[in-house]
Amino acid sequence: MKPLKIGDLAKQTGLTVRALRHYDEIGLLSPSLRTLSDHRLYSEKDVQKLQEIMLLQLMGFSLAEIKICLEKKEFPFQDMAKAHLQRIQIAMQSQQALCNRIEAIIEALNHQPAESIDYAIECIKAIVMYEKYYTPAQIETLKKRQNALSKEEMENYQAEWEAVFKEFAEVFNAGFPVTHKDAVALGKRANALILAFTGGDPEMEKSLQNMYATEGGHNVLSGHGMNISAELFQFIAKAMGEAKKSNH
Image (cartoon, rainbow, N blue to C red; front, side):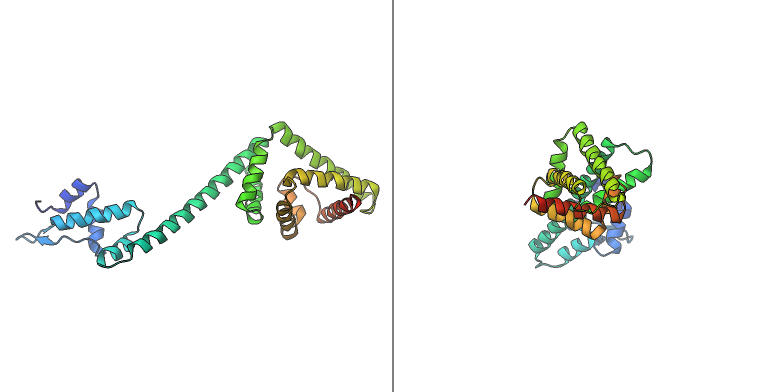
């Protein structure tokens, strides 16, 4: 093969002259021949090395990693490839999590379109919060369960929660104790709604309770458009506990 000038090699490979000069600067690939007038030329061996560099780049290796590979005759390439694969898999998982997050935001906005960026931001906060406390498998289960419901069913579920909270507020403001029959009856309705949400999965309920305990139940609910005080939430939680006791 005839030795090539840098411009000719760039045209032949589709790379830029700037990229080839950068390879030279970092010691990755330098022209090994010179003309009598001191022009640098790439030999056939140089071109073959460039092809190896381009193949490794196609696999996603960085120039620094490629330089290490090509400089060592005995190199644990398999180990490096495995490590590189793990990094790609982690990146893919991160991208998939981002896709799932965006899909969840779109789904939330389908049920209640955002009139301003504030509501969209609240949706994002709620979704990120769920990711902290629910396993990927639990989130997928919740997603499938939500997708199985019609828009009307979702609206009815939301409306039932709003009605329960409103009635709880009335009982709480009236000064009734959590053992009052009205509070216990509302507790049973709330427990039934939680059961519908968790599907009776104790691990799912544990994740929910952990989120409420850590973030504050009233803060979690505010992300769903249900603004209640911390005191009212505590009253509701205790009434739900009394309701469970009355079932035994």
